Length: 121
Image (cartoon, rainbow, N blue to C red; front, top):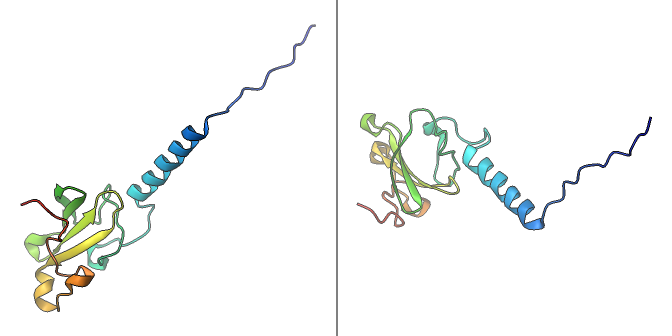
């Protein structure tokens, strides 16, 4: 029987294609949240990162403006609003009825709504 050597498949790709795949993977992990970070909106502070694809229980996207998303976390029953960067998931500011019981700290993003970056309304 005549056997020919099998040629191994080549999986070479250009460096640009690999870089694009890596960036896509990293962005996907950022948006997915990878299971880390606050689980409940009661635990969220400005500067935290949350997943906009699966926001904390009780939160839903209310509006978006430019590079920010406004999350409504039961504002109608004294919950907070969070303003979150669309690409990174970083909480820029928070506000709601809880601000009446605490000292506002706009320099930290607490009780500073809407943030300066929010140019809609």
